[in-house]
Image (cartoon, rainbow, N blue to C red; front, side, top):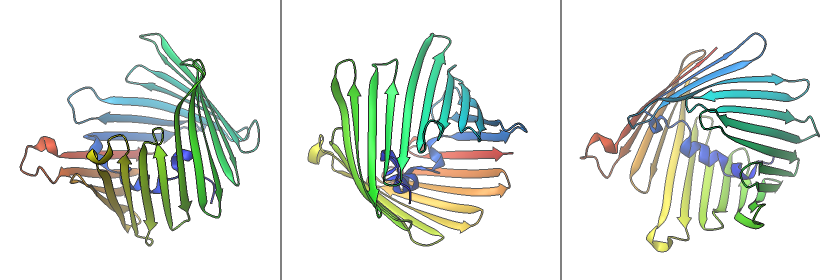
Length: 288
């Protein structure tokens, strides 16, 4: 298995606990298409549970495979113009460079970032530079061997010459299961996660989190989740946390290129209260 990035050491369990739960937005629509010249277009729209405008964006992405260059441009409903240029294995083998810019025409504010990803068989290193704000640097590295992983992250304020953040993580990952312990937020927030691919149809996972700053008053947060594959075109997911918030999700491929997602979240401690304590969501994805 390839060495993951620092943020992905606990990715299997994090994805099981957070992805494909459609109650987080009241409605979500995503339309994907590809032009004959290879440009991929994606249009996204999302309506949250609060009254207000729908947030969305239109994105165009073009990849020149022979050179490894990818250009992505997006325009959002917040009137932000985002551009990303990626050079994958162009400058050096295993090195991916990204230049990301954003511009807000209304306020004239802008941003520019440089990201570097360097992957080799036994390690994965990343560096993130915010060129205009600060400037600042964030970097992380993960070393791995025979499924064992160890990584660290650090943030540095270039102007003031001080470390702004640091984190560490260890894990073990094989195709059937992964386990990880992370210490983030300057080693104040500890999390232990576990993911198990039980068989071709069933996945299960759990995550426990403790904030050292809040001490015993905050307690330990616990989430457990499971995914069951009904057939090749549908699956269901369920999760619950120690606060009694339960979530269910159903995903169905209606036909090639059309996917429907349904989700609901229920506060089991407030079943007799108003509907505001509970959430439902709908997700549609169209691909052409």
